[in-house]
Length: 249
Image (cartoon, rainbow, N blue to C red):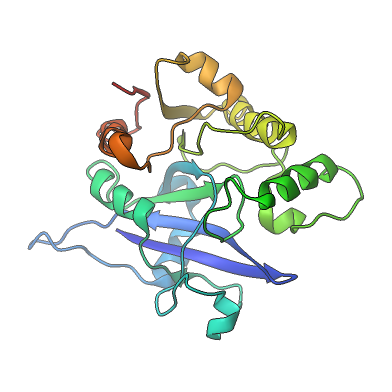
């Protein structure tokens, strides 16, 4: 697997505004056939054929090859030139690389995030208060703390490529962050309205239909005793093309 993204910055905040993973085809020796940035750009000119679907996550913590997440990219001399860069793997991409294989080879999957802010551990933090406040202002003329276009999705005009949307964006939202909850719900409901097939992992707390209405989607990444269960559930989802809805056992 390879992964590519575009980073942008505004007012000292860093955003991952475009992100794709590529599931490599194999040569006769079963080695990955790599693509480069030019290959990626050619594929993106024909998204209807090249993009299999979309995976929605919470927010990114990832860096371009040659850089790391130990400090801001600007402090490492990164040039925000608006061009795609090949990215390092993180824990989530490692899970994807072991799970998304046959049936997806030669295809791109777009990775979208509820929040494009490229920063570790934003939940729970004071940042969530700022995000919630931003979303309350989003459809007004008021200024927001984080860039409206770089950090958020306008669900009414949101573009989703490919046949399916897999939501792994999480399920734990503080009840007083009502704008974040509504934001996540609207994105999920809009995906259905756009005619996309929606997949995710859920548990016994809610049935599948309820999960879409309340944006209850278990992340493939977890800690502790449930880590392997979440990973295995994600793998089970992507054993087929398109994926399937899984109920955590």
